[in-house]
Length: 404
Image 1 (cartoon, rainbow, N blue to C red):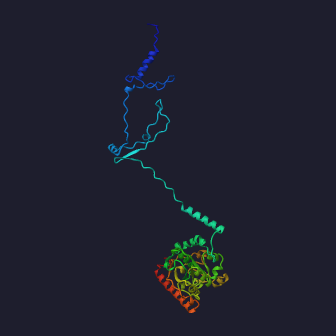
Image 2: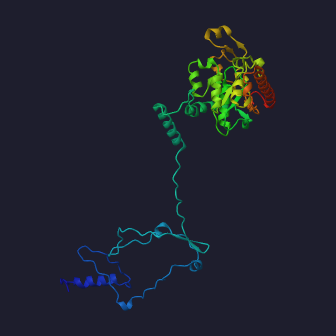
Image 3: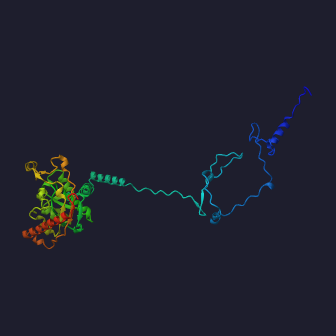
């Protein structure tokens, strides 16, 4: 009919569209929106109880090795699968709840094993340098406060142990490479008189002998050296000599040290041995009046002859400027191939190879009554000198070369 307006029922049209959208069999079905502005969300359709599937009973016991072995080994799930599903809100959207982590299991050779845990980290041991710094600070504190012991001769064991000996060990081990033999002839306890040859222009053999006795002897004994008057009249040298345990070369001091059970070292050649020319190397000079023998006889201390090879080559003495020595108050003024030509550099000792041998001790027990008999003293001093001389020749044959 012309001009006639046909009004459609909107409710029917909307109802048909909703039916088509919710009917899954309809070819033109569309997915309805989950939330429409201005409308309330539809409640989910819950089926009746008779249409629900019965629940699957869970196994009351965990999987055993037999059941795990029956199942084929599968690849490990990734990290997202291992963490398990996340919680969801009532409207089906994922929420921000915490995820429950599940330890990943692996099936290896039919057995289920957990991933190995990280090894426990053991606490680190204290640093060696920290210990040394602490010892150094404690040493300095004792030196500043005066909390250290010094005997009647001025011997300072702590200063010798921590300052003097470490410095000399560098020369002893790395520069001269000293080898020692016969250290078992030095008594473990009690007194003894060590008699050695003297050489080298500068008396470094006395210092190396002290290090050898302390470091090579199982009892770590200190050697109390007897020095000449010149040593104790020289500034700085006298202080270091006293602190290291040296004392004046006189019979009263030597006898007191031996009676107290100390090891005493003496060089009977004196400056005649240190200042002899290089052409007379390893030829012993006269042993003086034999005062060291009298001290050993009175105290009953054994005499241990010591032969030192290597000191003659550190400063080869080729000349002596006697006028300059008298002007400076020195026993001699040495001239070597490097000094005074190179100035202070010429005072660096040559790195010769050193060998020190301690001979068998000479017993003096029961000879105290002959301490004042010149013939007994001279004969015993000559016996010691001859023993050292013959040992020097034997040790020189064992040495491969001057610089080893």
